[in-house]
Length: 263
Image (cartoon, rainbow, N blue to C red; front, side):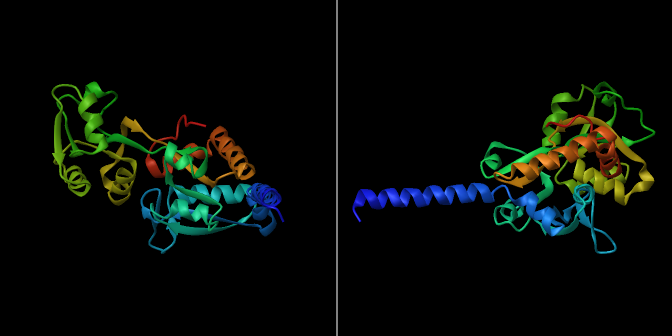
C-alpha cells in the first residue's frame, strides 16, 4: 500500500471512529430509559446540600434533587457519593450519568463537561434570629455581626456594611458559628452550607436568611456531548421552577426560595 493510500485509509478509520464516538455520546438518556435506572453522583460531606443522616443514608438538597429527577424520568436511582476532587471524573469515566454536587459553572469546567440550567442557589448571606428586624444593609448599623476573616463573605460584607456596623472577624468558620450560637454576635455572615448546617443543629435559635451578599448558583453536570440527557433534565428543572418544587427544596434546606436562577 502506498503512503498516500495508507494515510487515506487511516483518515477514513479516524472519521469512522469520530462518527461512532459522536453517536455514542448521545446514548446516555436512551441507556437510562432502557435500564430503568440512573446513577447520579452526590456529595455526602457538605451539609445541607449532601450529608449522611442519623439513619446513615444520604440526605440534603442535592439528594432531594437527584431523587426528583429520577422520579420525573420514571426510573430507579443509584446514588454515588463523590468528593469535590472526583465528581467530574465520575462523569468522564461514565460512572455516573449526572453529577448533582454543588457544582458551579466556569469556563475551565465547560471545556470537559456540559451543564444543565441552574437548579439551586449557592450563596453567601447574612443570617440572624427571626426576631431581629433586618430588611436592608442600612439596618446593620449598630449591630454586631460575625464573619470568617478573609472569606468571600468578609470581602462582600466589608463593601456593603454601613458605618457603625460592628464587624467581628474570626479565624475559621467554627469560631464564627460558635460566636453567633453563644450570643457573642447578633448576626452572622457566612455561606449557605455553613448556615444550613448551623440552623439544623441549633433550631432553638430561630435563625433565618436576611440579606444576600453574593450568589453563585449550582448546576447539574452532564458528560460532554450528551445533549439529549441535558435537555431532558432542563425540561424537568423548568417544570420544577414553574410549579414551585425547586423553591420548596431550597426553602427546606437553605431557608430561602431558589428565586431566579440562570438557564
